[in-house]
Length: 401
Image (cartoon, rainbow, N blue to C red; front, side, top):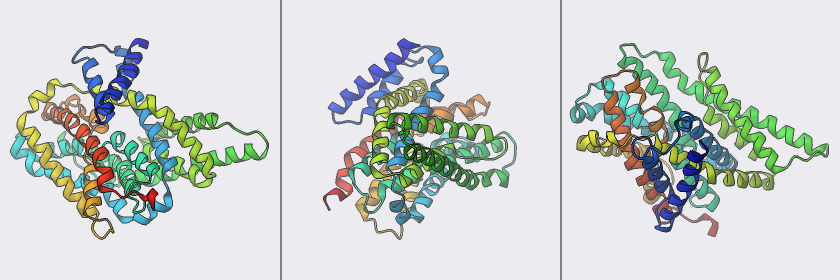
């Protein structure tokens, strides 16, 4: 396993650096590394590492979400309000509607199977979007109108919404009926996640503050470890509570970090953010190489031109949903276009649940996986390149004001 970890980190970072030199997002190099060393191509990774791949990807995602929370200014987020809420579900609804309308015509599946496919494909990738929005917040680009904050918040909630819909549609595809209680899990999950995270953040702040007042100063490195351990605990609560009540672990992690930033002095939260930024260097390579390793490229050939057309048609539906979210805001056309581009990438959720319909024995399973793989290979690089290349052209530099 150690050799596999060495390959993931060293080759992943090297490939990322090469792509960065070519003025392309480094995640493309990392994804390509994962695909090449995966069991479906060169098969260089230890099966033991692949067995815990989903947990390692989750750890990496937690690290960037904590950094996001420590960078997020809640007062700025309040300015956006309604659009941030709409961004958490409306673009996904439009994209699912696109699959329901056109997948039966293009791919020969029924409406319920099209809804399952739409739920798998409609989630935006926080792994691609969140680090880029954090970077824009730190560079103060578009922050005056809270654009990166809005996208960051929307992307964090979007996954919760889509995964609940996915479980509902899968039940319907297996011959069951959708229940109102299942859909009620969406707002319950979001509210409980925020409350749980806020409570955890308040407890950690009191712990750090009490230790400081008593002369037992806790080092920032130790604080980072405590925060990370608490974040793991919050994600575990989601799993433990699942049979009884829905709780969003991802939102709990972001909320915890937001409360710590809100209550702490600016220098303290700034140093903590830097610590998690350093952790992200290794976590980013781990995340995207392992996402690439989960992609079975053999399915891309089977997907065909119809699947490609379906993906771009659904993205057009998604773009309409994003534009509707922006109605009534002060954002100009350039800024609205950036929001559309930032909401394109697919990767994390598709890699996690793309194979589930196939493992559950649904007739559409193989096709869903094929389209999910194709969507990752197209939209993750497309979205990353789009964000990196357009942010300076479409967003204002607020640091100069």
